[in-house]
Length: 324
Image 1: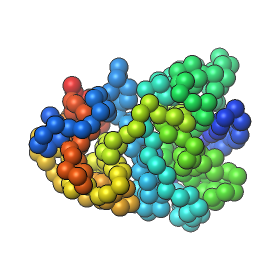
Image 2: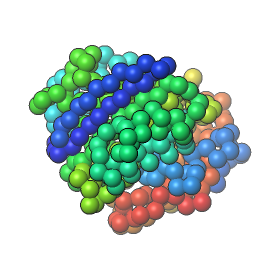
Image 3: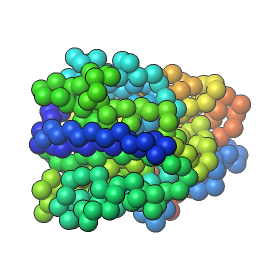
Image 4: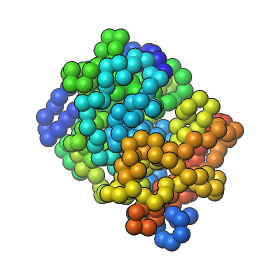
């Protein structure tokens, strides 16, 4: 992945204090009843879509195991994150719970930027960025935002994450704590408990692809151990399914159920008790259904999503995100 024509922007707002910077760079689970909270992980009114869910999963993967993520899922990015020792000074952080209000705010902003031709945190009509977020999200006064737009190739949440983590300063990534790593600070901040990601594709716009991360200081409940899951197109000609699992002890099993067939997952980042689990399969020719299951150390089963099936959006022209 080479940094192409792309733009990044970051805002941090904590307890009414604003720090501002600008950067341009171009079925139940297993046997028995599931303990998963009712409705957890099930899209609400179309939120989130695949791109947004995948970005949520990648964000949490970074937070859970920063350096492991850099080595495994961002090593092909240029400029090099490893050369600047990106994320070395950031300790692991708890995963963020998806929040509908923040998802709505983030998607609205991505749509606004693409449709109305601006690239900024404030709405294109001048409404302040914090007023826009607070119009949706009221759980906490601690909020923050990252935005990005424009890059080569199809929509790729992994690429966008690498851009934010790099926080390019000239031809190199910004070093931790150098003052130009604002996106990274937001992604790794322990002040946040919730996240909504927003994506919109506007072919006629300046940058075509628009991304927003809206962070909140409080969540609408606690996430179960099987925090989230999605798929990404990596490595080449492959489909990798990722699930974040965080608990006091390692689970007995974490499983991908793909087209009804259980496939064991292995730890890809972090540790069994706090890590990202993965299963990789060859790229197929159309939509496939899947969900994730886990059995914790005590034998309690969990499922993500709690009901329905995720769909392999982007695989062989698949345009579906979810099937009830």
